[in-house]
Image (cartoon, rainbow, N blue to C red; front, side, top):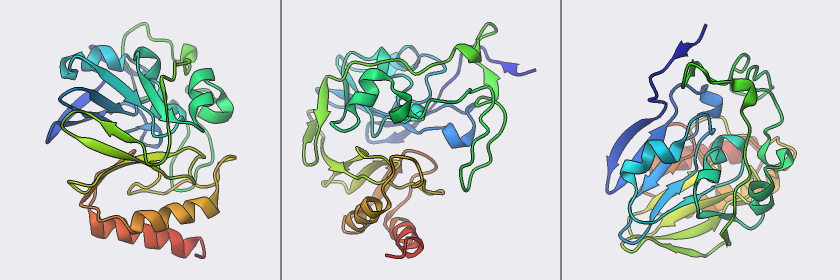
Length: 254
């Protein structure tokens, strides 16, 4: 029998400079997304929203300023589960149909979370997607990705203005067609989504593109990065970014 929690589904960790990392520790590592809250002077930004097992908006309300937008680095199920709770939802133009329609062809939410037995190189899967229940009456079989309203379709080069911080949208296709990152040139900070993280990268999905992924890696290699806050696993710096990029390109035969 699974552990039943007292309502504290999320963990919050301040990492400084108005940035908070939100995680779902009772989601299996393969589906455990890093959720980033960036506090701005005029707008707060939530980068990805997790699996949607419990209400992110309700749990994070203490962090939010007067206005908050939820941005999806891409629309796979582990990154958009809470988007439907937000009035402002942003993603790349190529990902927008998946967020609006909750289409499993885009979200990959076509399996039962009670038994995540799928073949993903580098990850152990099998059994339930969660290791605890958020409430005693929670029904995992009723979980679903819900449709969200896309209020802004992003393109490469767009600028997101938080009032005191400015991020450039980078189109980083490969993992998915409309994967994006956020680049803050002033600080050398990159929010990379699943384009790159310190773990086994996934490029074999039906809508992945390994040629595009290699180009994305070359682009990342050119950035004067100080820190990468990724969609999974711990953050890392410039040298680790270079190691990960070169390892991918070597494996891809680039």
